[in-house]
Length: 176
Length: 456
Image (tube, rainbow over all chains, first blue to last red; front, side, top):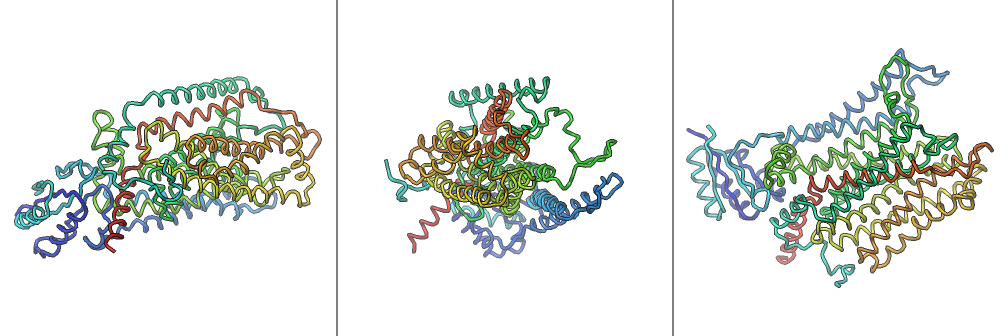
């Protein structure tokens, strides 16, 4: 059976939320809630309540980036101070910890920020090619889109739900 | 005129339609008005003066700028600190106020973030310019070379380079990531080359719940990084001075004093650009007088912190045991630099008292004048930190009180303002200077709160 994507556009969050609740409470056997997506001009305030917890593990990237930035930064500094280019220190430490800690702190932040942005791109699925027809420029303006992917029968039921909640427009595409 | 200071007027009209927000902001990206071209031409003239002076200095050496020993830093390093300070505006408005959920920042934080980036790009120029022979800049980079030299990792000057690089790149990423949803709006409404340009910048953003969730966490995380980073950057700039043995610089309170000064000048610059943008792009609907009032109050609070730390610095020197530092302080107040030193104290500590007046905070003209005076005070502060110390050192041969910056120094300083202005104006024509999605959020949440209040 073919898989179809359907996008309903609503003029406010309330109508979109009501239709998602009805889709969720409909217990369609072929529908997984992970296949329900909200597209909106701002973040939906009740997105977690509607779609369930969808964690974005960006903070793990942040943690890894910070540790990596700090450790590699310190190793870079220490190795450059301790290598054969080492300047004559006149009895002072070859690897002076207090100034190195200042620099390590900066490089920890550098690594943290860079890898956080990398994590953002990975978790948000960016950059993405906008090949799907199921995008409407009204979504970036003032309308809320609810997109569902499922089989033809389920999509037909969902279309009725969208119509009951006065969707401004409904579009479909066959994806496989 | 309604008295908004009594809370009668809202930060923003909560009945603005979302489509109107898009339309108003996107209009600012279209064909420039006469006021824009006038400002652009003025900035270009200033920049050209700076370039001409730099070329002249390049060919003839630093002597033409009236540098000699011991006067080696002059206006270049003073202005470098000034621009680094200005860069704290974005951190304050974007990061600090974001974390404490002050949502009135939303219509004005984007240009403050841009200020941060462009201020740092301007400050970086002075690091190169003050070297004189800037084609040998790569000598100071940490890489193994045939000269068998590494930079001195114990020097705050190297810390400065790394801290500013971190701050600049992090600020650019913060500005860029925060603007991705707005680039998508631009993409959806643009044609021609702009369509391709914004399509590239928006990375295929479609506003899905997954993208918004990742975006929210990322923005907050970078904001959390930027706050300690901004504090460390200006603390390190302060360490350039405080860790030396020069009279007047070896002061323990310099790092917090510099950070407060940075936030102060950043706030004053926000007021200036707020008013310029409000009139140039007709953003009266978004850059409202109640928001200007809040920025004015914030500026006053930071001005008082700066004033306190300024007096702490004077007291530390006055009651300290360093006769050279005390002598320098007396010299600043009574010597040839005294008009500028008193001017700094007047502009930095007395002028902000005007912000206590509701009528001053309610008048864009008065706020413009006050903000320019505050920034003049902050620029003088940096000059009064750098120059007098070089003209009144430990040895009699360093006590040369009649050394003033040459026209080349002044020209390059003016050029830096032109450079900043050009970058900022180009930014305003390419990137929405008001965050559309955040203003929508602001309007939406306020409407929602009102509805809940009515239902309760």
